[in-house]
Amino acid sequence: MKAQTLGELKRTYPIEKLRRTVKEEARENLIAKLRQGERLFPGIQGYEDTVIPSLVNAILANHNFILLGLRGQAKSRILRQLTELLDEEIPALPTDLRDNPIAPLSAEAKRMLAEAGDDAPIVWIPRDERYVEKLATPDTTVADILGDIDPIKAAKRGSGLSDLEAINYGLLPRANRGIFAVNELADLAPKVQVALFNILQEGDVQIRGYPIRLELDVWLTFTANPQDYTARGKIVTPLKDRIGSEIRTHYPKSLAEGLSISLQEAWIERAEGLEVPDFVAESSEAVAFVAREDKRVDKTSGVSQRLSISLLELVASNAERRALRLGERPVARPLDLYFALPAITGKIELEYEGELQGAERVARDLLQKAFGLAYSERSRGLDVTAVVDYFAQGNLLTLPDGSSKTVLREMEKVPGLLAAAKKLAGSNPSPEMLVSAGEFILEGLAGRRKIARGEESYSAPVERERERWGSGN
Image (cartoon, rainbow, N blue to C red; front, side):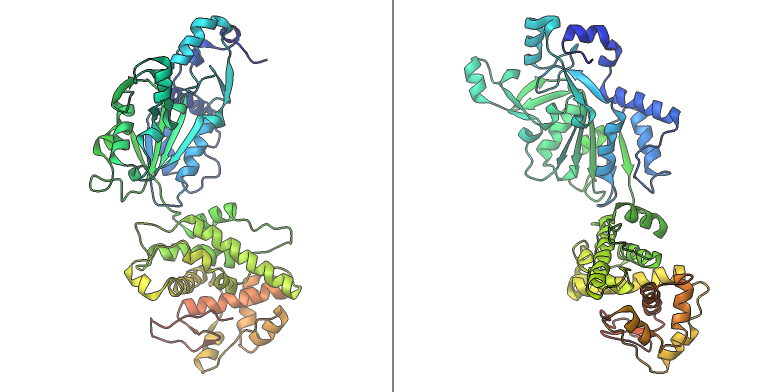
């Protein structure tokens, strides 16, 4: 049974654990995990040889640290998993600052110990409650972070405004003996950044001009956009200098790595038995990769991994909608990506050239490039010469918005298309899978500029780069 009073705690709880700082606690637990060979930061993929080693080094060095990276690079997720390095629960006095029973900070805790002694009550704080996160915004104030003087409390006590018991504490003091995370640090006003600098440098707090010595035991962690985190950006240089480690995050470095993350996070395993073929999922993931290289997309904002996740979920939803309407097996098709354009247009920031063209036009162009990229990964061993020749002879192909059998009848008109689709789809493919494979080959050839894709049909290749790509329904 857990101790309920200070006296019981002294008899049953290791005193050395109460003497540790939160950073020392995390360091000890990290060392134990490393010795046991446990996986660190489960669910975080692609950082095993880059970000995580730097992060481990920072923790072993007892550093406050910052994660620098664009949006959608799992920065917040990493910070939230830091709680796994804390003890399952710790004892504390029932105060706003969750005071250490043997080293109280607040006046309330000191008075409690003076009056009750070993009978002072003890509460137990679980690890999840020791994490406090704040999204920085320009209107965030020092009072939000540190606290403010309550003049009514001060008047009732008849004390000065610098009396600790006249303070309503902000987020940072309430994170005492825990982790305090600030997302997008550079968005804080310089005055608030200076207040954080004082905490890092001196451990003191200044509230309304009154210096208050409050040696908090807090592990400070931050995130920021690299473009803002410079002397020419919006960061106060002395604060930057006091942060122990600067760790760079990044987007997935390969299509397979990115797809693994998206499949882990996306909700596509639905009760209806929905199937998303590998080549459709790869095409969906490729959209983010080509967007990150497209000159019409703002590089400083980045292209979040959430684009790939949302796109994959909408592709699955359109396949589900079609199956319900036609009474078929729900198998995702490449053309479903065109119904998922809202996942793209809502998650990319455009440069001036892209804004002139419009988000939807840019999104359609990105889809075509993505199909070309995914097709290049899958086209080995596929004989599509007859398919390309068919369109080069001036023939058109319009795929109906109907059942899989109806679509297959149209695909049969193209020599070699279904043979290549069967090879791509595997042995004994269902009609739904065969249609999906056939559409992928057509979209891939269009993306590689082997054939052209119009609003409603596939046709002979065109040379003009500015050709408008349509939905092809």
